[in-house]
Image 1 (cartoon, rainbow, N blue to C red):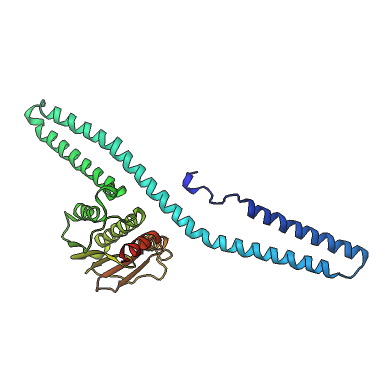
Image 2: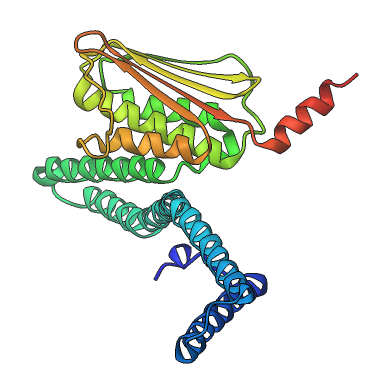
Length: 296
């Protein structure tokens, strides 16, 4: 099992002690009931109090377990996204280190052959070399999509711009990326979420929207990082529950925003384009630092 999917349950002495006390209370209550039944005696007040304490303890545990179960879907989704990012990084490294190096070696061999083969085979060698060049470029593009390494070094704005240039350079889509402030110092999980949401939105636009114009806006607001993605494509009817209605990409966007306590809304109608607005709230430490810096 992947270590990120291991159980989140940790043994805690306090919780174990409460469970043990509850079990003892239930056992004592059962024994007291049996003794009273065998002796045909009325229930004294002490035994009634014992029953009440045991029932209250059981009720507390049921409420605690219900709350824990309610939290597990969000925790599981968070873990799954982390595993997904880890697997993307692993695949990116394998593509770059193994397949990329093999293609580079094949390209060098093709160059060596082209310098030595007869003239009638030169055209075939050129075709082979061009094919290897295209394949190597595609591998680099896939590697960059799987693992945007420049996020940590170049930042969110430069990474998004590089992705848009690489993805849209051979399309007829006019696009712009608007950043009204510097985006340095953004938490890694927030930057990854904004990058992946934009990546998914651009993929959907190219596949389904048939848009001519795309505008991506990123802005620092007092309450958090704002991301807006607008296109003038054919639009669609957003589903109330995207995951159950086949809109998996949209469901993934919503999950990424929700895991950061953020919001994501989709405004779209057939023939009127699509607008996606996401807001990622600043972490508590960032807000405290901002308040401290603004204090005179």
